[in-house]
Length: 199
Ligand SMILES: [Zn+2]
Image (cartoon, rainbow, N blue to C red):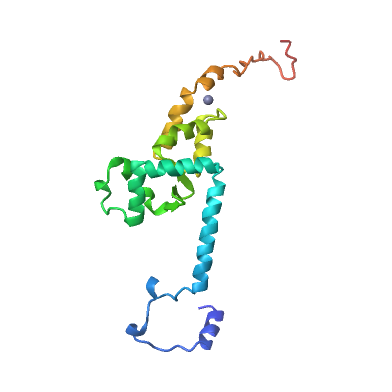
C-alpha cells in the first residue's frame, strides 16, 4: 500500500456497522427537489421547447400546417396516445407501420402539438412528398439530401424515400450530363529520364 494511503487511513476513524445498517440509496430515497429548482427546470424546459421550434428553420405557417396534419394522421394519433399513456409491452402486438416507431419510444416527446424524436420533427404522411421536394430544392445528390434531413426531420424509411426520389428528379436527369468531365489524354511515356515529351 502506498505511504500516502497508509497516512490517510491513520486519519480516518473506522467503525464497524452491521450490514442491516448500511443503507443503499435508491432513486426514490434521494433528497427531495427544491420547489424553486422545479420552477427553474420548468422555465428551462419552456425555453428549450421554444428554441427547438426556432432551430427547425421552418416557417410558422408551415409548422401550423404540420401540426394540423399531425392531428389528422391516424398513425401519429395512435403514437401520440402510446407516448402519453404508455406503449404496449409486447412490440409484436403493434401494427407494422406503428411498430417502426417502437425503438424510438424513449427518444420521443411532444412539443406544441408536434411530435419529435430527439430533435427531429416527425412529418405526417400527407406532407412527406412536399418536404422531400423541399429537401431536394437545391438539386443536391442522395447523400447530401440525406445528411440535410438527418437530425432535423424524421419518418420511417426517409433515407429510402430520398434514395428513390433523387434519381427520379426530371431536372437532375436533364442537366446531369452537361458538366461531364473531359476524358484524360495521357502523354506518351519517354524512354529516358528528363527526356522532353514532344507530344
Ligand atoms: Zn433534382
